[in-house]
Length: 278
Image 1 (tube, rainbow, N blue to C red):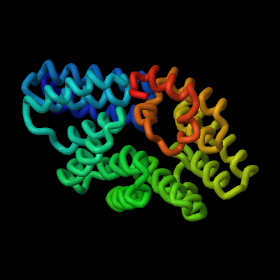
Image 2 (image 1 turned 45 degrees about the horizontal axis):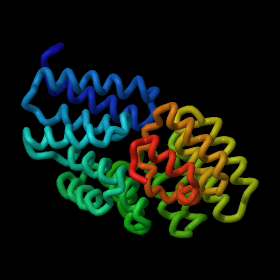
Image 3 (image 1 turned 90 degrees about the vertical axis):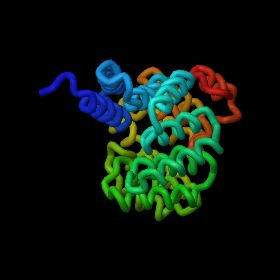
Image 4 (image 1 turned 90 degrees about the horizontal axis):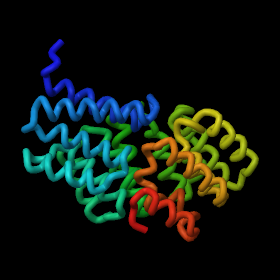
């Protein structure tokens, strides 16, 4: 209706970024559309910080360009204070490169700026608390996010992961089973069964996970194999995730599900491939 209306272009960039993060379109398609919309918004309104925030998110979750994300966030900040969305993205960037204290501070700040946004609670729980071993804190973040948005994509999966990592295998399995197949039902079930000593049930769930999400969420298949201690298969799936630009790879550093891989030279080589510090 109005090709010069910058807020619409910004909204389109945000929508496509979210679609890419959720895997509802092929990653490349979603994020390149997001980039195009963000650049258009920047052209239409050069004084708005919002296009820079959207570009920073693309740099973090798709390009894995940490310096580029930092540059865009600084440009956004020069044009005006960051809202909760911008602070969340800054938190994700800090977590990706292992700056945990800064990531935690920014994540808490994002929640304070907009406590009714489920996204900031989920990111605080998954990207920061789970990755720093604060599993009980992660559980609370996920429960709060689900209280706000009960159907949040992968929300039950994240909650199940927090419970599983605290040793609560049956409650974790119950949460995983509430999740949709696209958002981790089978991946989570495979890990919970394995942790509880039920290898055959784990194998069956993993086979279903591969059937449902082998091309849309390969990084999570890698996490399941790593959790089960099957390193060769885990690295095979990490390579697939890299080739497909799986958006969840940006936060592999410190991932508790990948802990079994950390002593393997291939893990450090993979971090280097993603321009992440070892």
